[in-house]
Image (cartoon, rainbow, N blue to C red):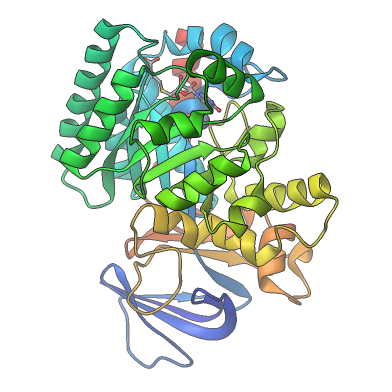
Length: 424
Ligand SMILES: N[C@@H](CCSC[C@H]1O[C@@H](n2cnc3c(=O)[nH]cnc32)[C@H](O)[C@@H]1O)C(=O)O
Ligand SMILES: [Zn+2]
């Protein structure tokens, strides 16, 4: 199978050089980027007036949480989780979560996300939805033992069960990751076990770390150190670890993350909505820490739109630092694409020969995106997910000219509505 995207404005290479060119996809890879490609192709997409962008990598989300969208807003993290989210999640069945996963996948396809790192439960069901959707999903079962050894064992067992189920899907697009929830919900025994299992099975790890000031206080009280120092001391950190949030980091924490090659998944929308705080982006960048971008779940964002998230990231750091030069458009754009891909060991997030064909075609024939003075600036500051017209993952078209080809939109929406009605 080959696809030829004709005459678009291509955001090319790691440096984001915008060139007017054609993009030829052969199989699941980008084969050629050049002017006037003569080769024929099975499918030809006319991209005049459109931007051919790397697809977005949502580096932290809980994709089925769209089910809980709008049910508990305007609360701080711990109250939000303990009083509102966890009691509702306790009622979610496998079927409900699968319906939520379809809803999340549909939203991601429609807004140009091509890969995502997820943490929830019934991830084998999420995997089935992701398989059908055509997206790339890195799926972690969220483990919580609250220091109870019986629960430790139960959570490890469930994670391994879901790992095996996900492996049975036999798709390169769908990978299991270990997802211990956070240092304040997981015992050291569980965290150490996860480290060991990740090494043994060659899987990535994702975990919420240093999200709120109260978390850091809690860990300080319990262990006499910061969450990052704690994780470092038990040998948990490494370049296969993606921490979500990293809001409350001191200079020592930042150095530890840099030294261990840890990636931080930044979630500005969620951090602002839950009033968690502001990630120290300048310190992290100076230390050379890889930063990706995520939306977090749709109950704390409240959507999965990575284009919107880029703007939130840029604006948040500017106003917080009273410095308009920080978090410039290119830096933020790389966070949302190539940095996320790097964290997942994916040769994607860049439009260039040899890279995976994970692409979003964005319609610039719209008043808020004209004149086309600066493509990357427009993507970060002016566009939103609704401007995405065509989404390609692994060389397969998931959405063409606004029409989703892999999922039945109406059915997905209806099912999500129904399960929520019946459960909550
Ligand atoms: N095994 C656990 C499932 C945990 S999934 C991951 C959890 O992360 C929660 N979550 C979502 N957003 C955040 C956040 O920003 N910080 C911490 N937890 C979150 C989410 O609601 C979910 O409970 C159980 O059976 O309860
Ligand atoms: Zn989260």
